[in-house]
Image (cartoon, rainbow over all chains, first blue to last red; front, side, top):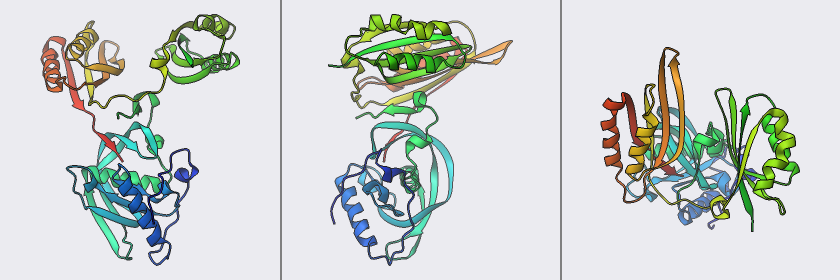
Length: 163
Length: 182
């Protein structure tokens, strides 16, 4: 149980397929704890399991780590998927696994996410704003999708991150 | 210490331009760093930052490329750039705005818009313009990315741009670009 290093592209784990997990799987608790410890040690608000090299469908999101954001607080979801989203908007997005760059990405203002809690209970979350963006970004990680896969043009959509 | 050159080249668009230039650079031992290439109407234009190999100057590069570029009729210009400007450094954290301007085409739109941006301390870091619309009613469109340094006043720039609208006969939007780190 400890903070891991966040994998950086081109680590192949970031482009790999992930497997669904059962909450009864004895490994899940340890992976979740590592993700929480890693998130706590990071400057970010969310993590997906592939970012610490675990090819399973687990995300942790806590937008309250960002000043002024509340959302649902800390959320741990297994096997999450998007039920519905609406309100398309273009934002400039950065990723802990692709440091120093940001890209213009089409996201949605509202997202309904469904998954199961580590206790095995079904969870449906209605998210909006920054929290919705965080869920969309983390769900992309479970598909091996990076923001680099979503930009249309390097000249108009990719930018060196402002530090 | 690495040495860099900025190379610009353009010529009538046809298949094989990028291949010819890239092969020439590769054979001369240059490493292609960042590039921006696009087609403007019928001209293919290239801006290429290259890392120079030992023993090759930026001045020599253009002439050494000639065997590759002249069959394609490319115009090639080359200049050394300071390593300080060419190395991958980080930029300062500064708010970014997008400015879209469009209206009936006439001379002076870019000049007047860019002047107002500059006078308010805005730094244009990316800009594309196109003439669109019907032949007899051309519409000028431009999209600019503007960085506003700390201490500058984006609201004042927005108001100044709004004041330009009637005299320039354009519509425009000046809006902050939300940046999200995840």
